[in-house]
Image (tube, helix red, strand yellow):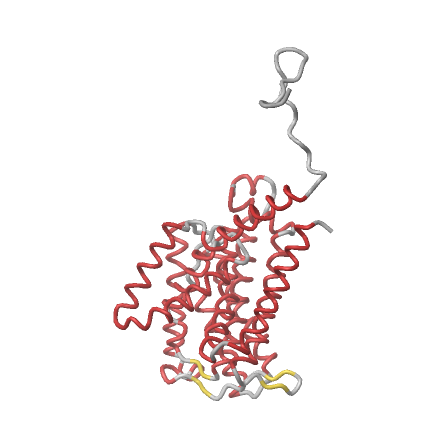
Length: 344
């Protein structure tokens, strides 16, 4: 086995050990923030997929996040359904709504499409407020049961931490697999050269709708998990500000990288909490930090990490691989070889 492969697996093992040890040593508040980071990562992957692979700027993810949460709340509290059935209903409803809405609006592009998704976020938030018979309106809905797996109730942040992060890993694996599939190559062709992709027979519009539906399903999944974690949902959690946060996660993390979504979610979750100690100016400081990050890291955290990873292991592989080909000799004008300086 190559030395670089051993090093990579060693880093993965160290990362898993650190991940498993965090709840044992970190405070309850920090573990709580990391749980929200995982939830935002799941929803952010959907936005990142739209932005990075299809070039679609979507501000509608907060709507599907809210649909998942309210579907879970209504099905579990009012109808008494099990959590997994309520979650499936929320994901199905979100996917169906995304398909119906996506068919017309995804014919738009650029700023017009961004404005259309922003309008969806505003309309969704308004309906969450007005349909109080379903959502509880401004009073919200409480009494949502905690998740329970095989008799083990996820009643603490530490327990939910060990459940939600493996869910993130599964979503990442599915995301990575899709990127390497035929549909993944078709999406990148659609993003880079839509006219050429259409000429090659790729159903561009239908593919956009499919990705939009996938993004909505991930947003609904995150919303359902959010509802079970906090046991209470209200309209304040599903406004336009939440939609902007999801878009920030995709942009800051690097829309074309998988790991970047988690890094972006960490930034959006932990940075405001760390800056809150500065009182009334914490929002201004966060805005300045955002501007500085975008200026100096235009490719996002994930892009920087990917470049560093590739350079580090490329250099390590070249230094340790005895079978690496040496540089070819430099030929002069004649038949003889020109020797390097310092050699006879």
